[in-house]
Length: 225
Image (cartoon, rainbow, N blue to C red; front, side, top):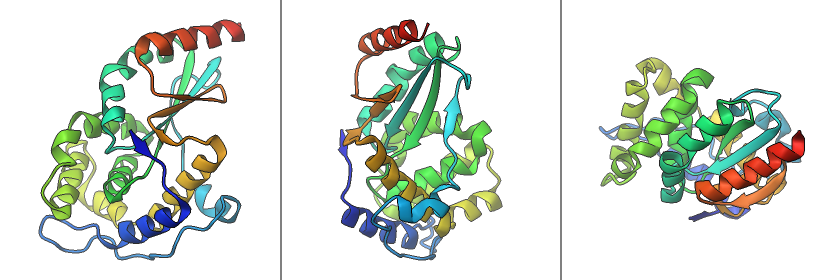
């Protein structure tokens, strides 16, 4: 279970993330600004406004679930493969739950995977997230940063993102800054301290098995009727 980072750690991580994304051959892919993330969400409103929430389900569903997940978090991968499919079938596809996934960043690999996943747009996003988590043990455990970056790019190409578009996304330092600032604002707003965490109709919850999650969702659906 990954833990959230301090403001200072976020600043250092942002600097590292924008400066060291490389291909397998070792060529730099992101050399944009390495400025530290601002201290507060208020200061970053123009940047964070550009970040789009990725949503599944009906807009008017009675229950809203926000998941905070890290792409390198094993517990998040387990939730994605073991619990989420049942939640989607029983609650999202039936119109009971609007589900929002928000990325959490604990290392450079989380950032790079996020840039790649969002490059596919809203139509491809959740399919790419599934690919990221289902192959986590492969791409996240490469022997070098260059190999990890190359493996992440290969997922994007397999998902049908054009090479030139993918390269542009992976070099977008301003987008990366916006995403990190958005993440910091989410931590401050919702108070989560580990991943995966869930905000269900405004209330924060830690990771749980399907049996507990379904009981919670049933209670929220009944309360909304």
